[in-house]
Image (cartoon, rainbow, N blue to C red):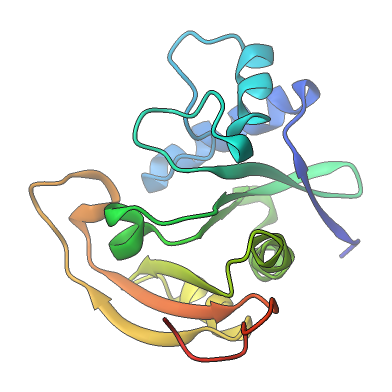
Length: 186
């Protein structure tokens, strides 16, 4: 595996990102987050670049970053970083979401993506990152544990909420390496 780079989305990522979004829809996973229906790809990419500064955020979203995971010029996955937590994220979503293109699974990219995301959160003063996964997602659970995740129970589902909140989530606190980041969960 070549070196993984987390970087802002680019206009030339369109085909690979939309393919990953289409393929992962079968797993009920959204690869391309926050894109408005019918929105031109270039406009979407430009809008994601403002998210760290709360510019152009989708409704209900917090400041964060949507980053492509690239290895040797190939889009292998993505990371969604949240620099703060709202009620939903504090229970089910966490500070980091990641996804791997189906063609690149089981090659260590999920772990590489999460490891690369943690220092970016530390730069934003997040000392402990909340990372969650579905109860039955053994691969994601192992990824989080490989990155130092400490279990923090289960977020019970809210059947009325829909989306990710409709299934129980394992919760983990992962040190980001920032000041105080090696202490326990908040």
